[in-house]
Image (cartoon, rainbow, N blue to C red):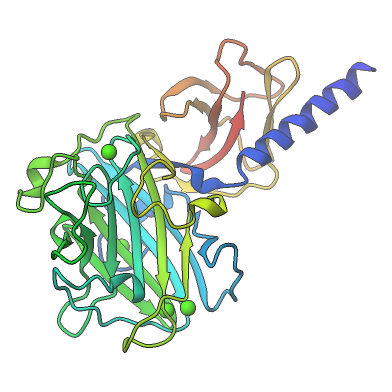
Length: 357
Ligand SMILES: [Ca+2]
Ligand SMILES: [Ca+2]
Ligand SMILES: [Ca+2]
Ligand SMILES: [Ca+2]
């Protein structure tokens, strides 16, 4: 095969592999560190949110694979973290044609999944396993509130772990795990903005949650999936129409994550503080690819002069940094196989692209 053709085949194969890996973006989530904290006011206009990427909530688990009109439901979220506050920050944007709230918390009232609820699965040490009635992982049902509260955050806990007494008052309100919370809406578009303490599994509902905060550091791996329970009917005899998620699952797993953590998305805490304040750009004239000789090639459009190039590994560590000038290729033979993020930045503009070596 002529060499050029061979290189083209390799290039196309790389593109195919990259696209396959990105088919379900909610499988691997990159949580960026933010030095400047977002203001929790129910608006995503903060500078901090510019450095985070949207993750779509585009999978229907219940009924499995059902498609619904965009006006019925469209959802996406962003996540950040801060090492000083030791908190995670979330921005969740939900379009829902009919907003149904009204759940009133009571330890015997398990009807919350039948109202409009943002449901967040989090496993702080990515251990997987059963979390039905213990705190190995949490399934926070963040409610849409009622006449006296903006939200509650309900999960199940029983002192007999893994064998819940379903009629024994096992529903717990973990509202105090969310130090800040604000939801606003413009028409049918709702913005949920909140912070969260990621808690370790030895926390119990009578404990002070601030004493059980997981240590947030660069490279820490967590399990995380963002979901939405959608009721478009009524708060009287409420019924859930759909369950939407950020994570792809097989049909057999479409209702297991509220009990088991093995299927959560993989989230890694990253830090790219050098890029704080940069504005993310979608630069169609800029591309980066790896050729058959494991040389990293790039094509820059004329908006760049001599930008800085960084290669970040899956934990967000900078493994290669250089200034890009014309006609150089970067040898990446030394790096092990896997996912990387290529970053090009200059004059407060930043371009990022996932690549596979
Ligand atoms: Ca805000
Ligand atoms: Ca809806
Ligand atoms: Ca765990
Ligand atoms: Ca609804």
